[in-house]
Image (cartoon, rainbow, N blue to C red; front, side, top):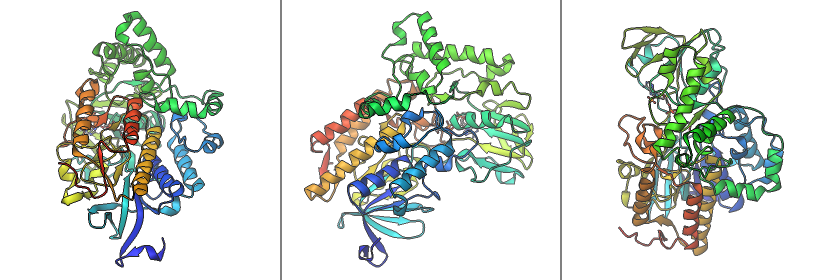
Amino acid sequence: MSDEATLDGQLTEVDAVVIGSGFAGLYSIHRLRNVLGLEVQAFDNAGGVGGTWYWNRYPGARSDTEVNAYCYSFDKELFHEWKWSERYPRQSEILAYLNHVADRHDLRRSITFNTQVTDVTWDDERGRYLITTDEGKRYAAQFLVEAVGLLSATKIPDFPGQDSFRGEIYHTARWPHEKVDLAGKRVGVIGTGSSGIQVISEIAPEVGRLTVFQRTPQWVVPSRHRPIAPGLLEKIENDYEGYWHDVLYSTTCFGFDESDVAAESVTPEERARRFEEVYEDGGGFQYMFRAFNDVATSRVANAAATDVIEKKIRATVTDPNLANQLIPGDLYAKRPLCCDNYYETYNRDNVSLVAVKNNPIVEVTPEGVRTADGVVHELDVLVLATGFDAVSGNQLKIKHTGRNGVSLQGKWHDRPRTHLGLMTTGFPNLFMIYGPMGPFTNQPPAHEAQVEWVARAIEFVRDRGAGSIEAIQQAEDAWVAECDEIANQTLFSVVDSWINGSNIPGKPVTNMFYMAGMAAYMDKMQAEEDSEYAENFVLGNATVPA
Ligand code: NA7
């Protein structure tokens, strides 16, 4: 940063600050700095790039999105050159890819690591955000891009006595960089979401004894992990633009053919046949969206989907009582899970399940975990696969003050509110990548589309000589109402999970997504550009209608 850029002694002036250096943050830096030519300062509280993939180093961590849609599209040469080894790449491979992207586009020099942004305040007079870090450094930036991650703020339970545990405790998303030696040890895992099922399946053969503390069972289908289909990446390259266009103009952005057939429209036999077929091919999102198009909206379709999984669980788990405990008596309407060998793991002699819904964990003792029935489950290592304060959690960790002193914490007290998941009224020039009320899709392609929208909005503001852009209240109200109306037609709204905030005690339980699909979302973003932001935004210092 040049000396000329320093104002007021301590205040460093840049064009844009980016928070986060995962998929979204890295691309934001590239797009704003390398393409738009802005002076960009980025921050990450991690010690390196990677976001989710920097933090989630637990054994078994891998993407459960097929890699042909879990990568960047903006750099065709990169797509050609980077050799993925597997259909669902491991954390280490994705992290290596993101590091490679950072090097390839020289992004690292714009990022200050190990630094938490603590405070962002809009200064109306200056037309700048004043941004403070945990080291007390201060920056002024006209534009602020928050790429802080949908699933980043860890949910660490606070069981009585937790500090007294004599063994080691790790949250899956704060896993140490050095290898944790689990060989032969007595390991407990709390949580059976995406992270829990991966860690359980991976470590069971290695540990001495594995105790799984399961509060709510989930529906798990196999991943059917395998090498990337021969010729697939070459086929994509042959119609590169067409492929990525189709990914973005689909519902879920996963790069597979989504079904346009309703399970309700076919016979029960055909339903079972098709679910069986997709189950055998593997993949959670595939099972939910490739077999039929109404699994997330129709109870009939949903029940047909779970009938097949239930039969598979019973056929796999040899102890019928254990099978009963592993079968959710609930809808299939959380984030869909997949993992190979998950149910098979429970047939191992060294694995036991403790159902803690009706027999909750009451304390952690020096020896292990005590459940309400008085049993102390003795452990050497306790793994907390307990999830995240998702969607709004990371944003709310930063103190935000907007125009006229409005506080984001206050504004979002009852629920997060945005327009398009990109901007929130009262906060000019603050852009969120994958913010609340954004699309419910595979993330990397959606991030790219949002970052590009943001970059074009910034370009527009600068070209017009306007100081700022801000979503108007009516637009935000209408967007929230539309999102809710759509979400209420889905089964996600009636099942407890991080998707609606119900995993965090005290957090408002509310819809936090636009669930009409990415194609519809692309049209919404495009409409704003086509109208030159005239309908739902105000430019410059104009007073925003109440
Ligand atoms: P999830 O999906 O939120 O799962 C967290 C799990 O931890 C879930 O089984 C919870 O049970 C369990 N949990 C949380 N707190 C407790 C306590 N206090 N006692 C017992 N069990 C508890 O988080 P993940 O990290 O697995 O995955 C999050 C997303 O990251 C995933 O969907 C991917 O998109 C990536 P509960 O269901 O609340 O009863």
